[in-house]
Amino acid sequence: MKHTITIVGLGAGDLNQMPVGLYKIITKAEHLYLRTKEHPVITELEKEGLVYQSFDEIYEGHEQFQDVYEEIAHRLVEEARTKDVIYAVPGHPLVAEKTVQLLLEPKEDTHYQVEVAGGQSFLDPLFAALQIDPIEGFQFLDGLTFEEDELQLSQHIIICQVYDAMVASHVKLTLMEQLRDDYEVFIVTAVGSREEVIQKVPLYELDRGVELSNLTSIYVPPVKDSHALSHDFRTFKRVIAALRGPGGCPWDQKQTHQSLKKYLLEEAYELLEAIDNEDDLHMVEELGDVLLQVVLHAQIGEDEGYFSMKDIIKGVTEKMIRRHPHVFGDAQADSAEEVVRNWDEIKRSEKGETKEESILDDVPKSYTGLMKAYKYQHKAGKVGFDWQEIEPMWAKVKEEIQEFTEIADEKQDSTKQMISELGDILFALVNVARFYKIDPEEAINMTNAKFYRRFSHIENEVRNMGKEMEQLSLEELDAIWEEAKKKGL
Image 1 (cartoon, helix red, strand yellow):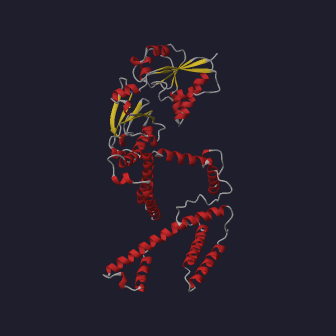
Image 2 (tube, one colour):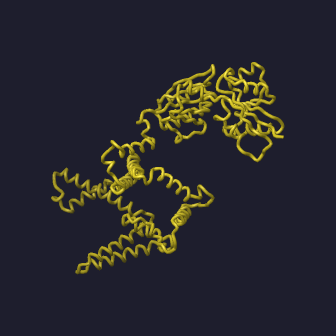
Image 3 (cartoon, one colour):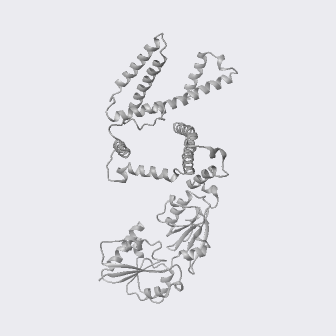
């Protein structure tokens, strides 16, 4: 015979709000267990001689609430081996009650059954006390476990289980990542009972000098100021949609994937410059500009009905999970090299590549010459077509320089051949760069930036002399160049 664990909700308020049926179940129970006795109903029923066993002492024996809940559930299951038990929890059993969820989980042990008798959730009196309508958008979060990225700040937010100052501090710090320090929130305690207290406080005071209990929740009103939500990706997406939509910006409306290509390239190079300069603030700005290009392309795709931002995010998310089986699956990868090998193998299998296809085919045709040379050599090196020491690489560079010099010394017109030989020199130098794990594109960009700084210094110095560049000799200009080098420009 299976014994029953009957779960009863004590409701959100006083005894006079409890349904008669639940009152009878509790007062007539032979074996009554309480998750906590700290509830207005229990205080009143104690005067009627209520006999019960509370699990309050378990809270003191564990550092994590999850451990507390698991021990409570375990004890109830053990008690149900020999008798029927009544288990009473605050509010409604199916609202913010982890112990109930643990009891309801399917298990191999079937010596007991669980029945939920009901109860009044604190949400109804809370909505009434705060005079809010959840149809406007409502989010219900657990103060013990919620994360910043779960917040929907444009909706009503209720954060429950704010037991003490430690939980309140976690809630405060998490909210302050997205809200002003003085944003007004409400601390709601014992809602629906005679002890009901509602306090409005600035966010930074949420965990300061405020009495908290297991009946405390935090209400965060919806954010109405659009500027306060400017950090939210959804706000950004709406802004771009408005620019592209009716009554929007004529420039944004006329853009196409093709017309935006040059801007993406420009923004990417400006980001690289900020990275090279180790300028974090500039990086934030340039990363935003790169993101703008991505969202613009996504909006164009959505406007034309071909794809949307959801498709982009879904595709890259699934790809990252698929290509990291050592993180999201059972594969092993103990080094970065193994990760790269796994990645390439998975990539080939996804594309259904056959042996007849070249491994160089997936290098984008739009890459710059240096980028393409680097990628070609890298891929060829993976299958063994590569030198393992630097000496033959330098020898190849010298050989190509010699061949270029011989052609350049010839009197006949050999421009086409010179271009070819100069390309060979650059290709050989890319191989040297690859050996030393240097990105040649990054290197040439760094040198370009260095040339720009030093040449600009020469221009400024010449202007300060009251002269034109053409009035100085190469030796004089070179001397100013050397000054720029000494200054670290």
